[in-house]
Image 1 (cartoon, rainbow, N blue to C red):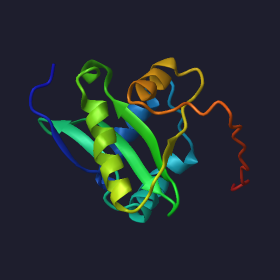
Image 2: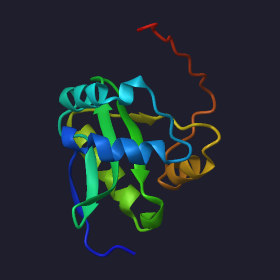
Image 3: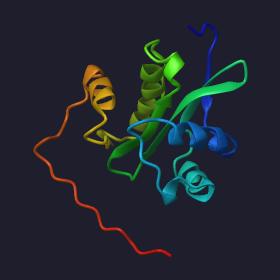
Amino acid sequence: MVTAVKYREMIPGDHQTLHKIWKNTAGLTIRKADSFEGFTAFLKRNPGLSFVVESQDRILGGILGGHDGRFGSIHHLVVLPEFRNQGIGKKLVSLSLERIESAGIEKCHIFINKDNRAGVNFWKNLDWVERIELTMASYIFDVN
């Protein structure tokens, strides 16, 4: 159990630590967009919407929040396993959603891998609605 945590806005310097956590988190998919360049571009396009949580200068987790002017989006919510079930993830979501809503956004989305049952359950427990009536389609650019 962690006692003293500090939440702060995410900065480019957090990438290396977060990327390592993402790679070691089951159910989370890493893509080219998660490179340092992609990460910093996301933060620049979405200032003040992403957060990390620390204890004794150690990053315990984080959340990437953003919007496109119409819909909000959350990516890569993660808390180290030994610090889960203490309300940290819920607080990270709350911080990001407050900022997204204050930008005039009325709806926020998150994409969860179907086999990530813990993730699906986490979001359902926060009253997020699983959208089973939708089919997602993606176009993937060949950027080699």
